[in-house]
Image 1 (cartoon, rainbow, N blue to C red):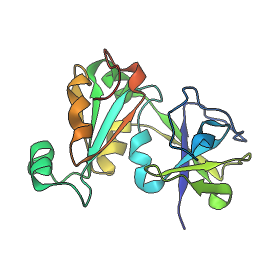
Image 2 (cartoon, rainbow, N blue to C red; image 1 turned 90 degrees about the horizontal axis):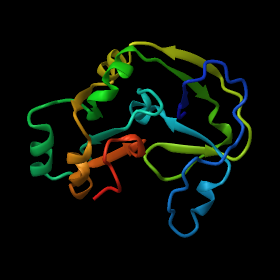
Image 3 (cartoon, helix red, strand yellow; image 1 turned 45 degrees about the vertical axis):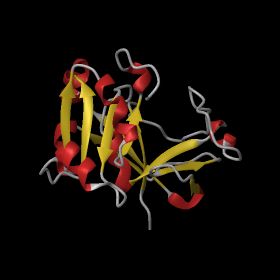
Image 4 (spheres, helix red, strand yellow; image 1 turned 60 degrees about the vertical axis):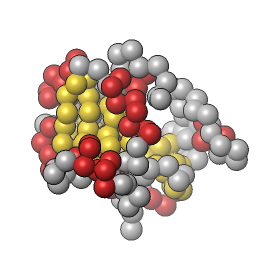
Length: 181
């Protein structure tokens, strides 16, 4: 059975009500409904993407079966970590001292949307439990995620042109970001 989570800054959400996303995303034909009012969750394998303060811009990269040996060597070297997370220095203290609330969601009303671990429910959802996660640096370490702190994320724009998987979250909050290359 798949475990699903929703991460929030709010500690006491009793019912998750479907709501539209803040910034509509260009979707392929037939997937426009993903900009409608929904409850979003992520699967356990991808929870690493949300072990950050909500508005923290970040880019996580990891190898896939299609990743070339050259790309893996260039980005990971001899590292054995599962993924590398990149944040801007201005966010490090908030990450170091922050916390997030991880809500476990019942999987019964969710459907997978075909985007890196993302699931949605079109109806209200009552969480199964909530856990407050302190020491987010330790949380990342426990998931075998290496953290890299950078002045800006902009030098990483080309990562989407590699054979690695790259997930960028809250990049609208990154310094001088613009659109990915």
